[in-house]
Every structure is written in C-alpha cells, then in structure tokens.
Amino acid sequence: MRVLALTHRTPFPPDKGDKIRTHHLLTRLAKRCEVHLMAFAEPPSDLDHAARLRRHFASVTLVPLDMRWQRVKALPWLLGWQPLTLPVFGSARLRAEVDRAVRELNPDAILAESTSMAPYALRHPEVPLVMDFVDVDSAKWRAYADEARFPMRSVYRREAATLQEYEREVARRAVISTVTADREKVLLAAIAPGCDARTLANGVDTDYFGPAATPASDASAVFFGAMDYHANVEAAVFLVREVMPRVRARYPDFRVVIAGSRPTPEVRALAAVEGVTVTGYVEDIRAHVTGCAVCVIPLRVARGVQNKVLEAMAMGVPVVCSPAAAEGIEAEAGTQLVVAPYGEQGAPMAEAVLALLHDRARARAIAVAARQRVEARYGWDPRSDELLGMLTEASERRARRA
Image 1 (cartoon, rainbow, N blue to C red):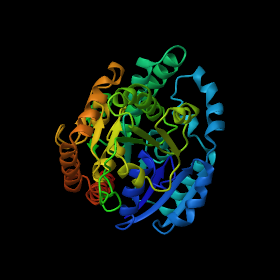
Image 2 (cartoon, rainbow, N blue to C red):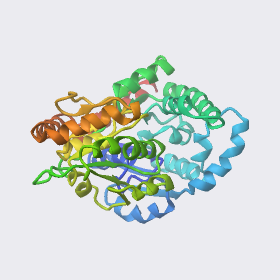
Image 3 (tube, one colour):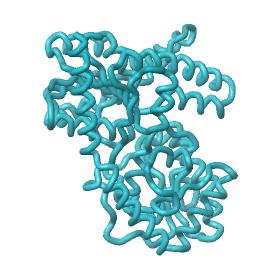
Image 4 (cartoon, one colour):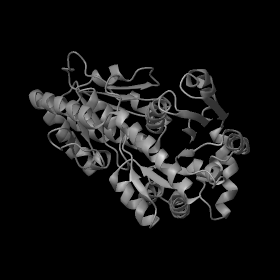
C-alpha cells in the first residue's frame, strides 16, 4: 500500500504533542507500507532532520515555513470569512509538491494530519482521504474566546466559527476522520452529521519513557511541554504564581522545574522566583521529569489526550492534573493519577501536591499503578495497526465505489 502523508510540522524530534503523535504513528506505519512524507519545516531549521527522516520513509519533502511572516500575510483574511488557520499554513510550493506526488506516485490513500493540511488533500478527491483532525480545534478557540478580552475575544470567536464550518466540510469529504479521544469524536460527529468519525488515541513509548531507579525524595514538582504554546504558558504561570506559594508555606524548600522549548518572556520571567528553574530546550526531558517528586499539569484548556500526562505516568512520576488535562485518558482518578480542580487561586491543586509530598507511600503506589496502566493501554504499535486498518479500509471503500 502506498500512502501520501501530509503533516503541518516535521515529525522529528518528537518533542511536542502533535510531533510526538505523527512521529510514532508514521514511523511505525512506514514499516508496514510505503509512506511518502510531505511536511512543513517550522521552524525552517527542521530541514536539518530530512536525512534522518529518510531512514524511515520512501521519500521526504520538507517545505520551510516562516510562521511570523505567514501570520502577517494572513491578516487581510480577517476581512473575509475563512479560518486564519488556512492562510497561516498556506504554501504554493507545498501545493505544487502535493500535486506532483499525486500525479507521479498514484497513492492508494492520503493521510492528512490537522485541519491545516486538509486543503492540500481536498484538491485530489480521486484519492481517498483519512483525515486525522487530532483535536476539534474550533472548540479550543471557543474556549479561548470565553476567557479572552477584547479584541482577542472577537478574533478567537471568529476563528472558532469559521474553523467549525471548515471542519464540517472536511469531515464530510474525508472517507474516515480520526481524533484522539471519544469526547472529540462526539464533537466532530455533532459538527458533521453522517461523517465517519473514529477515535485514534495517542500512545507513549514505554521503552523510552521508563521510571528512574530511585524516585525523587525531595519536595519538588515539574511541568513540561512546548513553552511557547498558550495553554502551557498559562499553566506554567498558574503553577508558579498560584500553586507554588501554598506548597512552600508548608515545604519551604519546595522547588519547581519548568521544562520545555522556546519559553516566552512570561515563562522566562518565572525563573526570577526563588526555587524555580526554567530550562528552555532540553535534549532529553526524562531526567527533568524523573528528578522531581510530582508532575503537575494544571491546564485550564486542553483538547484530546495530553501526551505529557501519559509520558509522566510512564516514567513512574505521580501526576496531579486538572480535569481538562485528564480528559480522554483511561486512568482511575485517585489510584493512577490525581485530578484536582483548576482555579480557586490554586488551592485544590496545592492540596493535592501537598498530600503526595506528605504520604510518599501513596505517591509511590499511584506512580506504579500509572506505569502499569500505560503499559496495558497506551502502546504506539496498536495505534499504528489501527491506522493502517483505516487507510486500507478507506482505499477499499473508494475502490468499490469506482
């Protein structure tokens, strides 16, 4: 089977949510069939990863994308009624490359990852499309709008409305549409009645993300992720400004590690707080996570399944997270992770952290149970098998119609 895979970011290194998903799904898929990868290099330095990616894929085409310039070019679209996502990821060069690949390769199916890649696939209705929405992004923009102030509230509401209309069109034209969690599937089915919406859950590399030989014994917490992503920035600030002082009132030596690439000025400023370390980009996140007693994930807004929750669970570090961060993860609250309400000046989350720092035996039991749950439910190989089955089904369904 020959698959043309379109991704809006280079799927290497697997260091943030969407790249983690595409990296593990596609590299495993490429062991089972012929996969031709076309992706944006954003930042353009991702072009350096082309040689490594060619070890996995039949061909690799990376198109550089300057996100700052793309956003400037998208501003005139505010006068119309189309989602800004489309011009931000619009590229005549990638469009030409996809057209060429379809013409020369005659793929059995196209796999497009995220709504931003849909326009390139929809130009070729003769090729069956499996559309991996990952999350229902219009719902995310609507959640941002509910909390934002003017003028961004209007911008976010516009993006939510226009993107939802586009999601409806894409889901109806795709043969199969996938999302990471059942909640997202329900949303997509409501947006596009009659579409074939399915859950393709995230996984975790349990061989790579393993527990430390000795759990951390000090009073410490870690939050990790891409630190230029709005939801992560908000969570990092909440952890340091709201949760940390309450924990320090009882554990004066309590320290917090904020680990992740491209920290914004707001995140970098947190390093001025006593006991806070902001690492910036790290080659290997594992030591920073397993070096702390608790992983705190206080996301106010989250869509789909959070890889960082699964990775911390796999590393045997007890997780305290918000309800939004826990959404879609098949784990038992209180036994395999701790869910604490967001808000209330950080009081519920601080109490949850304090409880684990006080009762290390319970913290250890949660960590062990979490690791066992991830091993049993969240391997990437079964997810890749599911994806191959969907691609094969999509190709066969289109062939029968022909």
